[in-house]
Each structure stands twice: as structure tokens, then as C-alpha cells.
Image (cartoon, rainbow, N blue to C red; front, side, top):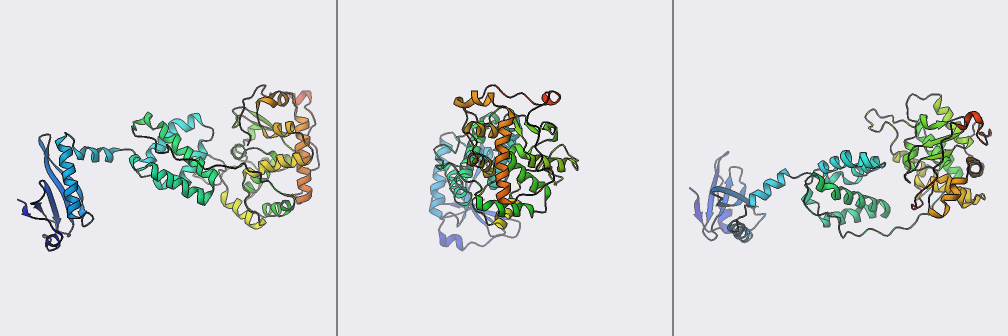
Length: 421
């Protein structure tokens, strides 16, 4: 039987806790159904005790003094009003306990959607681990528009507007697929405005080449060192270079076949002499299907994923700022332009696609593309004193011979318009 008294701050403070392991209840004389539970540890908790659907329900409000007596009474009135309308407040709490966490939803998104439909699913996984892991155990209903906006702003300050927008897009995509797995709430990214992005024009400047090459050459990890050089020498996108396979490299024709690119088409990349030298040296010691295998036994991808720490050290050693791995791709294109290559040739070498130049790209063979890339690399190597290799002066075949023609994959005849990157 609960002791009854008028709840006040003074009266509650005067209560003595029961024996250890026991609990007692007090009932408020001012608000019907409002109770106070007192445990042996001294903890005081407000509850509403009512019959709901022919069975007793004890509905927790909050601990005292986290909520004052007046706040507890107001909350009790609301709960009793909901019960009168046929609602059971405990049902919502039970549903919340059973609700998916954001981490569980992401696992479903990754395994049932991204891996099946997105070539960049590994980037999604890396971005989740890097920027969204703090939300892993949060219930979906706890991720509100306000929380999304705060995270977007925080990433924008600390990592830049571009990555903040990519994370916002990822969260939006995850929640847009959530109804497939039972979520009935709203997408919390709605009305969160993306940052305005400026097109980057950063590339390696003439005075930056030597310190850059020196810093790269000084790195002890040969896999990462070679990966960075090959990224510059091919102008390929980061994800494609990271997942480069030996099966896709043809040393006879000095080409690298990318089975699928961001543009949704395959690409044949001409390999300049410097790139061939690096790859042949790696091939001589290769023990993996990947050109740049991961050294971590627990790596899911099997290949190098994101050498951020080494890249940061290279920038520090070379005293370079605001240079990203993707800027190496832009560097090759920029140096091609500076050494006289046409826009069509540059577009071909970087696999840029748009309606107005697709026909020109389709008619180009590998020779002018390789020549333009070679001229750009030669200039960069000379100014930057790039790594000297025995075969760097040897030219790859200028055109396929009848014996090697079959090894050259066919060029796509059509392409769709996509933004250049």
C-alpha cells in the first residue's frame, strides 16, 4: 500500500531510503495516478500508475530532481489524457526498444543495395566509418533533421564542403531505402541545404613537382608510393587505381583495361613508359590479383583502400597545402593542356564524356592520347626530377601489331553526358 502525501520539493528531500534491495512507493494527493518510487540506493522516480486495456500499466516519467514536481504533474496529466483517448504510452516505448539502429539500417543498405547497385559502395562504407560511426547505436527516430544539419555543418567546418555534401547525400540515400526494411518515418535530410561547391582547379604547379617527387620517393611503403605515382601517370580515378588488377594490364600493348568506370562504360588507359616501368617492377614480385594489395589481413576489399596517413605525410614533407589525391588526375590533364594537347585528347585520356565530343572520342586511337600523356609526364618528370628508371626512355608500341591487336579491348562507341571530374 503506497503512502500518500502532497509532493513538494521539501517533503521529497526529507524522505529516507528503504533498506538496500527494497523499494517503496508514494502517491501524490494533488495529481491522480502520479506515484514516486524510492529505491534502497536513494533513487527517486516519478511514474503514472493506471489501468490500460484491462491491465495495470506503470509508465515511467523521469527521475527526481531531473523533473520537478510540477513538471511531473503536467506530464502525468498528458499521459492520463492519452490513455483516455485509447493510447498506451508504453507501446511507443516498447516499439522504440525494437526499432532499428542506424548501424543496423546501414548494414542492410550496404549489403542489400549498395554492393548490388553501386560501384562506389566501398566509399560509402569508408565514409560511414569515418563520419557516421557516432550514430551507429542511435535509434532511427533519434536522428532528426536538426541532428543531420548539425553534423553537416560540423563536417563542413572540419573536412570541407565537398565531403560534407557527400555525407549528407549518403544519409539521404540510406533513409530513402529504409522503407524497404520497415522504417515508416520521414527522411531527416529533407530541407537540409547542401553547401555551394566551387569547382576545383588545383593541380601540381611547376615549383611543386620536385618537392612532391622527393617526398613520394622518401616513403618506405612501396605499395602506397607506387600507387600515388601510377595515379598521376594514368590520370585515372582513385577508386579505379586502388582496385587495379593484373588481369586487366596488357604489357604488350602498354594498356590498362578498366572494366567499368564512373561513367558506366569501360575504359582503355594508355600506359606511358614510366607507368609501365613501375608496373613491371611490381609484377615481378606480385603475389596477389591486385596491383596494390592491402597489407592488412582483415582488409575486406583485399586491396589498398585509402592511404590518407601516408598522403598527409607526403604533403607535410613536400610543404604542400590543399592538394588532394584526386588532384593528381587533374594534374595530368592540366599538364597535357600546358604541353599542347587538344581538349579532345585530354577528354579521351581522362575518360570524360559529353554529347558534343563523343563522336571525336570514338574516332581517336591510342597513339595521340599516349603521345599527349607521355609529353605531359616527360615535362613533369624533367621539372620535378621524377624517379629515374632503366626503361623510362623506352617507348611502348606506337600502334598495335596484328599479333597484339586482339589484346586491345574495343572502345565504346557511345557515351552518355556526365559532369567532368
